[in-house]
Image (cartoon, rainbow, N blue to C red; front, side, top):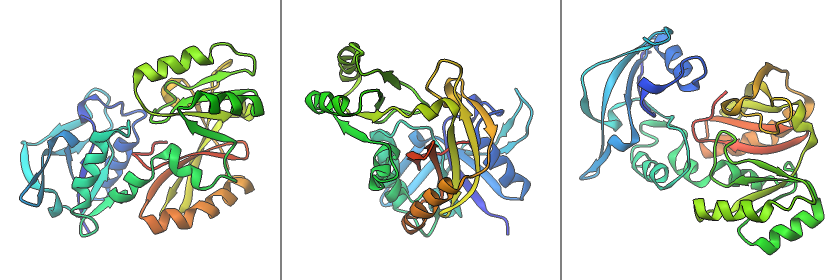
Length: 288
C-alpha cells in the first residue's frame, strides 16, 4: 500500500546525505513506493482548528550535490497525510514544543512519529531519569551547592547542557578541576536551563553505543568511538562509527524500557549506552 508521508524537517537543501538519518529513511520510503512531502516547522499553521502546512513534494536520489527535486509550494491540511515524521533537529525548545501541540491535534488519525504529546513529555536527558538504576549517578540542577556536594561524592564528573544536542557543550572535570565555576557561569549566560552533572564513565573511551528501537524492540546498533584524547563520541563532533553487536546488558536495558516506549507511542527511538549504563533516550529525531 502506498502511503502519503509528510516529513517535518530542517531545509532539505542543506542536509549531508552521507550521514543524515532522515535522508536514509525518506529514500527507503521512496524505494517502497510511498509519496514524500516536506515542510519546515515554521510553515505550520492552525486555522480554525485545521492544521495546515506550506511545503513541497520531493523526489530523492543518492547523488551528492544533486540529491533532491522539489515540486511546487503547496498549502495542505496535514491531517490528509497517512504519516508525519517529526525529523527537525533539536534543541528541544519552545518552537519544538509548539510544533508538538499542532501535531497533537491530528494524531492518531494521522500517525505522527513519535507521538507528539509524549515527545513533549519525554525530553531525552530527563525521560531517562525514570530508570535511575540503569543510569550512572546523575544530578540535574542549577543549584551550585548541590553540584559541589555531588562532585564531593563522585569526584570525576561530566557537565552537559540539559537541552544540548550532538555532544555540544559536554565537558569533563576532574575532582580537583578549578574551572567548573567558570563554566557554570558560561552556561548561565547562554540560557536559564539547568545543567546535568554525571559521574564520568571511563568506559566511554571504548565507545558510546547508539541502539535504535522500533516499537520498543531493538533493531540495530553502532558504537561511536571518540577521537584519541576526547570524551565526546557523537559523530557530529568527530566520533567514529563502528559496527557492534548487542550485549546481554544492552538487551536487558532494552527489555526494561521497551514496554514503556511502546505504551507511549514512541515508535522510533535511539538510546545511548556507555559500558553498562543507559545515558540518554532520544525521541526527538533520533539518528544513527
